[in-house]
Length: 232
Image (tube, rainbow, N blue to C red):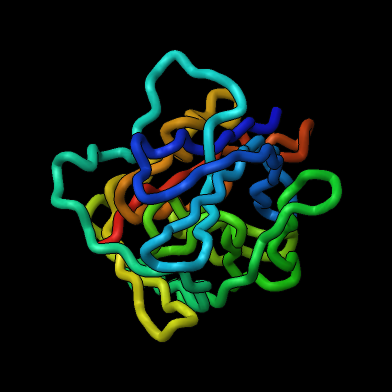
């Protein structure tokens, strides 16, 4: 059973931003297989920086717990500076030897997010109509854990721990540096949508891949691994 992942709640009182919503559905692809993701997309106009800054919005279905922004509360740390919108170009995670280029992931005509190239084991994708890494809000970066032929770029993602660092090179020449808050595994049929996709007042990133065991009956992994991180 695929996990239903919905996107974040709107940031309270987002002045001076204007917000509006439209529904979208996308897929996080792992090992060439799709994990169904139900999202809304929040398009936010940042009047101070100019260009529109699209971000994921309110969840498609309710949960008993209130949305939170990340694994560690934002109130426990000072608000980080954020960067203007810019496309990511390369992901560096020194601890697990990741040095990977980005590709844009967009929603296709069926309402699913297109997969990163299945023939490239060293490629990560970002939800290009969402927040860019370093921008205020929650940026989504997805990668394969393996393919039909070999391990892939996020095979070692589960080795990341709180305090580990990684960085994203951006098209504006800046580098956005992040520190890991936690790395957690969730069953796909009990995925905490609000927690993972909740909108935030800080610049945060979620690194997502498949985890758990491979279920040959449904041709999918049982879990998702999510790394929660914030801009430093």
